[in-house]
Structure formats: C-alpha cells, structure tokens
Image (cartoon, rainbow, N blue to C red; front, side, top):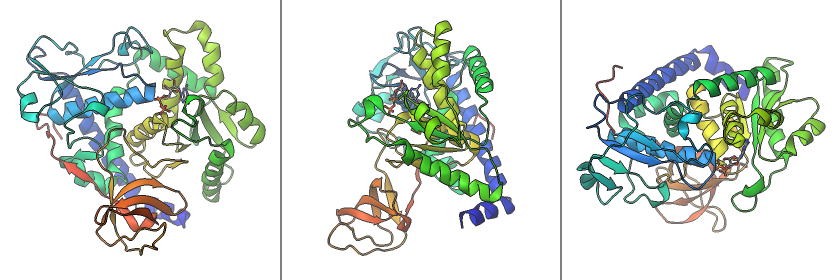
Length: 414
Ligand code: GDP
C-alpha cells in the first residue's frame, strides 16, 4: 500500500509540483527575512534583541534564536543577536555562521523595553529585548505552531505539517555556515562519502538519559532503518544501505558496525577526534554538532528521538530541502513539538467511544490536545470539550493549521 501511495504521488506529477511550490514559498520567506534584516537606516529601525546565552545545548540555543527570529518577523523588527562570549565560540556567532545582517548588527541607543507588559506598550519603543521563551509573558499568538496567515493556505496544500516548514525557514536563514565552515563541511562530506540514499540515525544518550528521555537500544532504531530500505528495495533492488550515525555516545558506532555488517555506517565521530588536533574553532564540540545537524538534515529519512532538540532541528531544516519531509521520520518517543509552543490541538475526524478505562470518548469536530503518540496506532490526549484524558486511535484525528496575521512584506516582490 505504501508503495502504491509513493507511485501515485510521483505518477500524477503532484509531488514535483508541491516541491517546486515549496521552494518558491521558501525563497519568498528568505527574501522577506533578508529585507527585514537589512533595513535602509539601521539607526532608526525598530529592533528585537536576542541574547544567545541560554544555559543549554546547541540545539536548544538554536531554537531560542529561532523563536527570536519568528518574533522579529511577526513584529517587523530587525533581529539583533548578542553572541559575544558564547560558550561554544567566545568570539560569537560569526565564528562559524554568516551574520544575520549585512548592514545592521548594533542595537543602538534608542528607547528600550523588556518584553511585556502589553503589545501597545512595546510598540512605543525602538528596542525590544527578548527573554528566554520560558519567561515570555504575555505569550504572543504568533508563537509556534502558528504560521503566517498569508502563507497558510498554500502551505496546507503543499506540506503535511506547515508549522515545521515555517520553523525550518527560520533555521534556513540562521543556519548559514560561513565560508570557512562551509569549506570544512564540504571536505568532510567528500572524505566520508556522504551521499544519497542515506538514512540519518541520531542516538542521544549521556546526560539526557533518565532525566529527559528513556534509553533506547540501537536495535530499536535499526528496525525503522531496515523497514525504510526494505520498502525501497521493492522499487529499486540492491540500494546500498547507508546510515549516517550521529550520537553523543562514542560506543554506538562500534556496536552498529559489529551488529549490522550489511549496512554502511558513516559517522563524523572519529573524524572529529582526529581533526581536533588542528581545530580552528575554540571548541571542537561546536564543529561536531554543526556537522551532525547539517548532515542529518540532508538525509533522506530520519530515525531518532524527538525529545532531542538536535534531531528536531535537523528535521526542521530537512523541510527546506525536500519540499515536504513531514513523513520522512520515525521518532522513538515524542511527537514533534517546539519548546514554548502554544497549545497543540488536533481535530477529530471520526468518533470513537470511550471505554470507561484507558480510552477517551471523542466526537467529530472535537479538539484534542495531544500529549503523545504511542506509535502503536494510539495517541494520548485531552478532549477539550469534556476535559477527559486518555487514548484514542491516532488516525481518527488530524492536525489543524493555526493561521495568525503577520506582516506581509509588500515591499518584497512575490
Ligand atoms: P538535547 O539535549 O538533545 O535536546 O539537545 P541540546 O542541543 O540542547 O543539547 C545536546 C548537546 O549534546 C549538543 O549541544 C551537543 O553538544 C551534544 N550532542 C547531542 N547529540 C549529539 C550528536 O549527535 N553529535 C554531537 N556532535 N553532539 C551531540
């Protein structure tokens, strides 16, 4: 059945059309961001200021910056990034990435306000300083999983999960390696033999286990890798089974090679260590995590735990490259979410009776706040109408798109 779906998608030409349209819309968003970030007069431009020093890992910091970028777009203010003294590169963001602006990187000395107390009060000030998302009060409606109203209809037509596409666009603008890093990435790709067809596996362990996520054995990931290649084999026999393995646990690569000899495992782990001799960044872990995210996002399919921001960032960027990669993943734990998101409600398409026990009653049109997917056909959530929580068949609900009015940037041609 999956093969038939795949054939139908390509045979009708709709896949190609959706991909093209996704690229066009992506290009529009990128041009809008470039316009926003390069105001004619930096001195008088309205700005939001975002400080990169959130006390967390790289993926988490990228998501912090992404929320700042969304805020900048939604409030039509240029984003100023403060990154000097960054724990990953003390000289700042531009050690590895392109600057967010060619013309305007200074917050200047205009009137300043910290986020809050009201939108109208903030509007009166030139410089708006953003807190970390956890202390964002009041919470604006433009936060994920919202998408801009002027793009919402098109996005719903071409993409399976528009909010992920939208977040991916922010990351595409932010996550632009500078020349030196890009040369490094290109050389690494060549040396490793990284190329399609390839499945990305991200195994997140060490400090995460038992605090924020459960331990998952390598075999649990490989079930899905095998399924992906078995299905592919029915269409193109004999595809080499390549896996890009990204992990913070150095033992996994050896285990993978030993246990799965029919797969070719590619990993940056060993290369990072040997390259550390001649490292040009203040912290070699920065190079490692950037390369892993970059390459995971360029895989054809991802198997990981969405509890990790590393994998979610890769999945978000993936959307900007594939057109629609919303189905190109298996998460062993969480459904997709964005830290600090507004409520994630799904709409019921088909009724299901409660059983007075673990199963919750749902009726057509009900909104269900999703808590998690058990990946066995059932999800868990709260019926907003009745307040009851429990399990329901995942296929009986669908995602809804929350469209929020944002600036439409008429100065930027379509
Ligand atoms: P999360 O904790 O997994 O949600 O993501 P964070 O980005 O907040 O923190 C994870 C940190 O662990 C990263 O910043 C990396 O330093 C490290 N890490 C996790 N997974 C990987 C990986 O696959 N490769 C590398 N190089 N580092 C990783």
